[in-house]
Image (tube, rainbow, N blue to C red; front, side):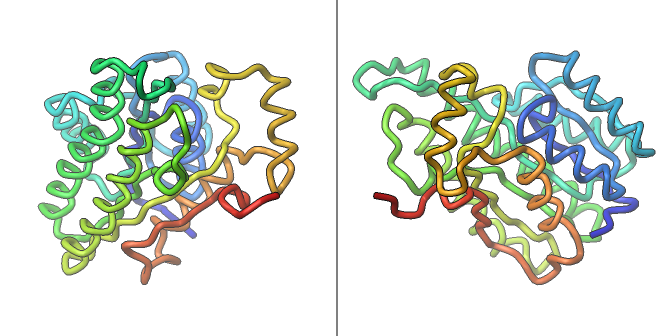
Length: 252
């Protein structure tokens, strides 16, 4: 699954799933634009790892909830790396509270990043790919929250369900231009974000209850994304690839 000569932009690439996607694509030959909103030191570390693999890397700060910043994010990628072949729309945020306790600001933030941020980035990336005239690949990082009514996560659930349908519709619109669009649905993945809501011990014990007895890794998500943006997936578009270790399977 070589990605040699390709340029990929990954939003929220400084940590978690975005980091896993960026590094896996770099291992397969892609140059990487590492986007981050905060934690710039982590973004620089990812870029160093990409360069250690012999690939080019740039670090771009942008808040994906801001449309103008998304426009500039795509433009900067093209200006510094020459083109854009792959977008991984990954950046996300979540406010976990019971619905009756959610403020408008809580809901707005989640939807601005997880729904509107994906819309903006996909639109500017698609326009760039169309202007290049050589096709392209877009992968939207969704979640099993799009399918499961997980409590205390209503804005996040709404956003993820929305981008699932958006991805399938966008695939229909862009297939004639050889731009493939797919969605990845991770399950419970071992990321820094999980530490906001649980201790190491709680995460470890909860992982034992999953069908595979553990949380998934960012490397496992990265490999799925690398497949979807490679020529090995040349006949795959409009698909939702669930990488969840059986998380959604019925359990006693």
